[in-house]
Image 1 (spheres, rainbow, N blue to C red):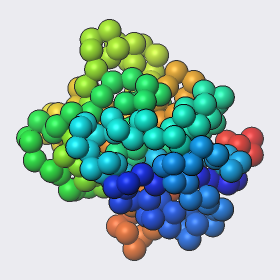
Image 2 (image 1 turned 90 degrees about the vertical axis):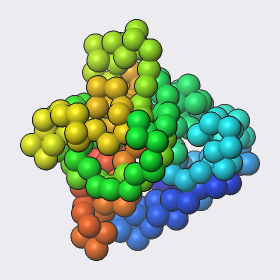
Image 3 (image 1 turned 45 degrees about the vertical axis):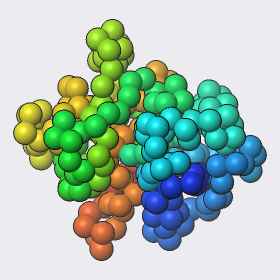
Length: 230
């Protein structure tokens, strides 16, 4: 499986994503620049974290108009797997590939910590090696990670099972004090109806080997090629 990792001006986790895929997981990677219109035959795409275009307008709002995003949108609409992490999640929402939006943390503070998330949807391309109800320990680092959506959209997400991850206790309980940013319904990540596009605020690419403090994040990347092999 050949992965594409997109770099926007301001990305700062693109090399971490490449390290995760190339070095830790021994996967071929194509480095895609934000001006690229050609995806070079990649089989899966990662939109990494960072501060695309400085986040001067709204996180991800400018990146959505990068030439590469037109190709990413077409790739996703054709069923290709796309994973957005942190700023990548914001870009997916801004581009319309995922519903909802990310706004300032309720505390108005930048948060850098480890959290537990509960897998609520194990049927996506990226959670196929997980089981529903399982908890994963992943790092977060963001100032605008509060997930919001209007009431009809939120209800549709719940009814369709599109909430993939929720902030939870280690045992999987949903409690207010383990929700780090005030996200509605403790939502940490969502998917599109088809399940091939997933966005989340935590950073699975920073939890892929013991040296980094945990390995739970590997499951999201391994799940894609495991599913591809049938």
